[in-house]
Amino acid sequence: MKQLLLVFFGGGIGSILRYLVSKSLNNHFQHFFLGTFLVNVVGCLLIGFILGLSIKTNYLSPNQTLLFATGFCGGFTTFSTFAFEKHSLLTSGEFIGFFTYLIASIVVGILAVALGLYLSRLL
Image (spheres, rainbow, N blue to C red):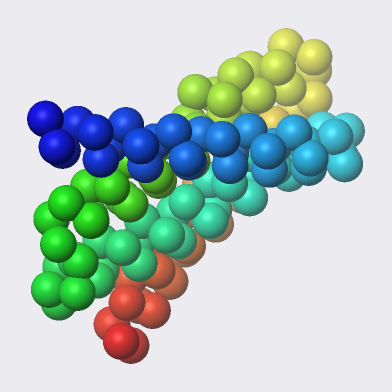
């Protein structure tokens, strides 16, 4: 039961922050959802860092890893919104925006995970 509550609270905080960031940044570019993009990149960086710390050291307990990686990062990042926004770009004929956003999100997300893992090794 404790693990479920940790995921619940972490996910709730992550979801609130995702909403605030997306709401404040998504309208800055017409065909690029900056808030969702940044949330997903930062979430990738954080999950790489958190899991890197968890794997490398005993700095984080299994419960803390559950709270931060599964809960917070799971609530903070948003693949469903990512997919919906891609669909919106496709159906509106914004093919360049679609491919730019898609490729940038995937490539930068993977690089952010790698950077998070690297940064966790420096501690």
